[in-house]
Length: 491
Image (cartoon, rainbow, N blue to C red; front, side):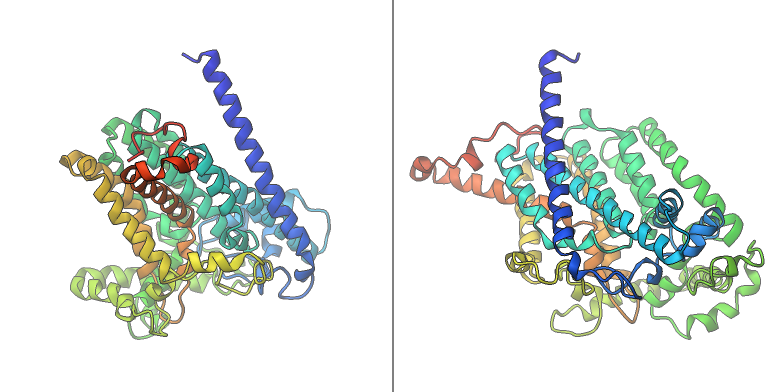
């Protein structure tokens, strides 16, 4: 029953979150405004960094999305539709001109505004997560440190789907953590919506992730009925997309991840175009004439690319079935160059690099407070801290985690999606470049939250060991916070 006291607490909590959201948004908006002189307004490199949205591999032409939004989304096969669907909406709802350049710039500005909103939402997620585990004061300090972090600031100005994906991944892991610690407050519908939106946003969250996610739900304690309800909601998002891809492009997910990217990830020979020719006759496309011209002859989203990607999928299916050992060996080829002193562009070398050191970005290049963050999130230091804290968490909670098979499976269900993202960021590497530090940003709010949480737990334990000597210091931040909401986390 919802009592008056509960209603009052909810109102205060919502008011606090609204205040933090507005403060976060005000900060990032003011930062963009104060550094607007760094932003070019014309030319091919308009924006804070070297690409505007039309020059990105992941996007369709703004002209196609503006003039033919339905056809553009319908025949988009290289990437999931979320990013271009949002861009098309901005171009056709907030269209105040008749020139393509102005329409594109307006859509880019609206995308940056959306990223500012998601920047503020991420801060609220981190605050809520930590408030329920370490208490109010520590959560406020962590929130403040996060909004000054150069990485989320950087990605507010990057016009791809990274910020959207990161917000959805953080939401998903927040909901999984609630399920792991306090199942009575779990919401299968929120988990399903976050997974469905991720499926439509980034290719790595499509079929392989979806299949691996199902056992994680069982491990977390979901009944068969609850899993079926979750899958039913997810299917509302993914079934129409599956049907479109199968009917038009003879594939069940975005074409690039299954075709060229997988082929080059495995370092197969000969060149993919040569291999694809042997299988093109077996591909069944429904790709009307004139669509390439309608999409302004996009170099990565055209009939030839769709044919070759589908053909490469057929080849890869046969090759993997006939060469399972070679497939596993080639998947691990990124780790062959995992030495931090090796200059080869492999993902393990780049994964732990600072996320904001990706492409030149005038918004964050000269932030006066960036240096401390550079050292805290150093490519050698931060992974050492993170993996050490993972081991310390397992040691501190060993009685809870390892007391029986059910507890261990429950932890496996929670960290399963994390392990998939960590693995795909290390292995899904093409032979000519690496962008693993950008992929790492998908999980960076989760990493950050965990490191803050575990730091407080370890300091609390140290305080308990030395309590007589430290009593006079009155460490209110670490000792006198309210009792956490989710389980006994004070050890």
